[in-house]
Length: 295
Image (cartoon, rainbow, N blue to C red; front, top):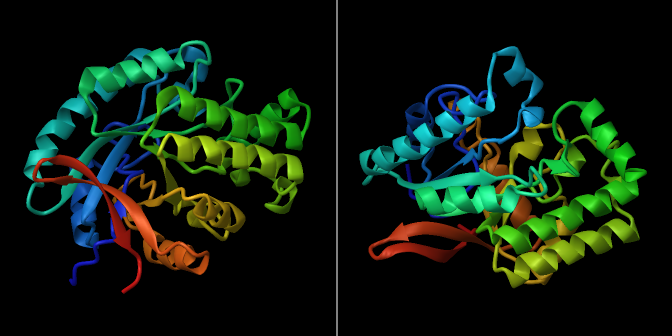
């Protein structure tokens, strides 16, 4: 297989070993990354939620607890140390995690605490909750979040404000699926209003100021959205503002590793993005690189 330097993912690698809604072992996920031809593969397991009220219904059904989530995350961090060495020479594996914005009052302390404790290579900052209501799971949860905000437009503005606040607070290296609200929204068109665009641009300004990278998240394809996250207008605006992009396959098992990446590459090129901003490991440690998307 010819080397394709742009095959870098910085968001994904979830496995059934450490994530209730994923499949297979982490080693199997990494073997799939090798087989796909990834040059660098960042694993960004979800940070554990610290209160019972944030457990997913599927976790409750299986008897999960916040203590189990914490133990599994600690085991994940330990397993990654060995796997980085095991795959050395075949795949650059980065130790990462996906931070969250709950509980509102203490997430910063908790997320930065995990980063300090385990010294992860990088952090993905994601927003799956608005005012502590989950937005990407059941449709009823999304509708509850919209109702709590007083309607779809104020909800979307609140979402982007939450993204901006998360970036200012955590300084993540990567911002995950910027317009995740598309997943449960009635259509992309209803999220394209002057107020929503203004809030999204404010978030992009903070992302640029903090030198974070936007996740071109190919899960949008398998969620039936017709494009990755973010939508075309956001890709173009971010590119105009000088915000870099990386790929994230957001894989939750070996079958999803690399899924949609070639399509995502074409999508970036079609929207004016000619290179990715990659994090990888060099002889002297972690480095950021710009890698052309053209052949």
